[in-house]
Length: 166
Image 1 (cartoon, rainbow, N blue to C red):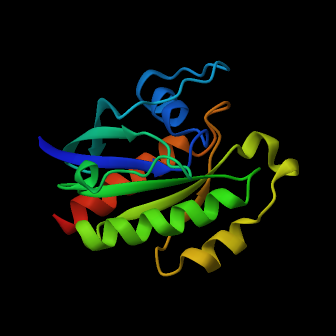
Image 2: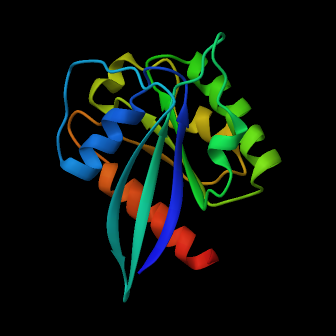
């Protein structure tokens, strides 16, 4: 089994903690929980004949008062950048976080998740807009921590990319 650090990054209240809870425990809570610092979970993923243990660093959300500490991303094998589809401003936050990761870790495998697909009719931006803004990051997926839509696919896709590079 190989161990890989994965950072969950995005603005506050985009659903990073909820995505991890849905993925690791299969649960969703309507109750908002602010992450202070870092919350760490793990899950083993079977990719072909290999097993990857993803150590998921759910890092506090960034806002104008609180910036993500670069020390939190050091050693990351991959990142999931999370945007709230109902708040277009969270895309700008992810653009800044992506640049910070590149500066401190380099180009590690990453995906961008546009969360809250269960209320896609309320989105302020499209997947195409996100992809255009974040190219060449690559994959942009719609997810819903509430319904589970795209969650398993996202984490499995990232694990495949990480294993392919390592």
